[in-house]
Length: 373
Image 1 (cartoon, helix red, strand yellow):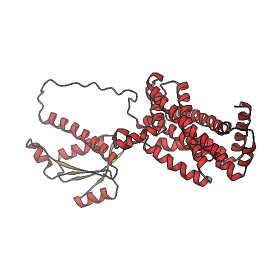
Image 2 (cartoon, one colour; image 1 turned 180 degrees about the vertical axis):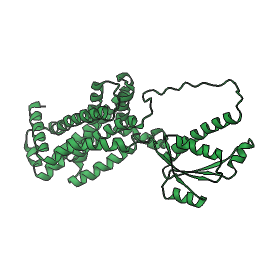
Image 3 (tube, helix red, strand yellow; image 1 turned 90 degrees about the horizontal axis):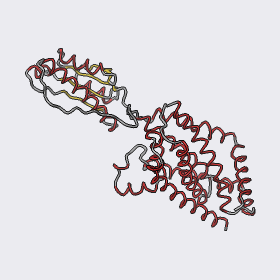
Image 4 (cartoon, one colour; image 1 turned 60 degrees about the vertical axis):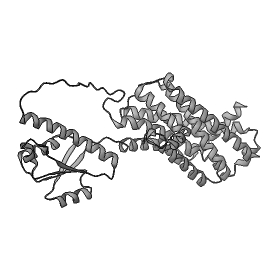
């Protein structure tokens, strides 16, 4: 292998890549915009629950319940319905997230010492958000019950109880942004590297320069390296850029080693760039390469554990996730960012990325040799 030829070919790739002004904006500005948008949009935190109330009791106790909901920063009472039909219409039109119906005998049951039911209707069109909203409302009702019992029965009752001292490690405030933003960084690196490398060889073929490359002394391995190295350098520069942005803009803690993070990024790029080059060798046009790339991106995203836990997937699908390099890189980047773990913990994921990368890269090199023949 002649590294001088590889170096000159890499230089040619950089000149060709940055000659187009559109590529400059796509490589620099696009990742930052995507990180900014996804960082604010992708969140499971519930901070504003709109509530509609139908109070058929209109007593002191029902007003206490409304005050308990309104005093909580998460809930915001926006509508007071006059009847059940109006309450349902407000919920169906998605003007509120929860509807609370207090029956006419609410206070009567309480003063008799009986349980007094109330109806809570939740918009279940988004099941995850609905379950969180119901859980929050249950916490408010539980606190209201304790205060009400303390008021009705002022006698102090002492009894043994369990005192749970709960501490949340790695994400003390349970901010979903701390969980999602490192994953968004990994996804952006995969997206950019796949898109550009999948069209690397196709671009030469459509421009009519592939024949010139065939007659050069470049070996297939050297040509593949020359096509890959520029995107490795660009992806690492993007990794630095989006990591700095994630730390200083979104205040995501970086607990682990930067050197390990960038070493893991190189192994991850070995897989994604290899897949991109393989797509480029089997595609006839840039449009076909683009469509094939998006065919890979969506399964990689869905089967990575980025949003949906892998443990909740069917067993057959769980086995398929072992072929997904993004699955391993998400574990690595979140472990380094949030937990500060090192090589002694992350070596299985690093080994898996190495094996997948070598296999895919070898297939891309062999496929390109067949194309030259």
